Length: 197
Image (cartoon, rainbow, N blue to C red):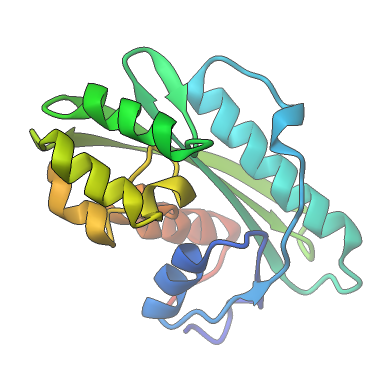
């Protein structure tokens, strides 16, 4: 990690986002926002994820007692068939979603918000990646949902997990699908005046 990059506070409970950052040498400080995501209701996917990412980052930034850091908030949804798809509430819903998604495509929208407390600067961006779903059988869908993995993920799949077997291809940033776009975060840090390596 670059010596001029301040400590990074990740406003997320996501183990996947933490793993992505650690994979490039950034060990984030974890501060879960506990922001009520249902308090923001926006029908347009890009506006929704950026608003939620900013709300999570701002919630954490407001309670920190030190200012020499960057707070990063993220939020992801799947846009499929003209609708926003977050985490499925139960197995039945996850199965129904997969039955509709198979053989089709959708887009993962991930909002990113960085708040540089020292420079008093905020940057908000959105990464969009197109995802093509495999033509999976009812048995495969049921078996996948029974693992519990789809219930933890926006869009009912984890690219870096078992769900990766059911994704034919993607167009765009693959880490954006997992929950945090490394190229986008690098460009945001660069805009703030920091090097990442």
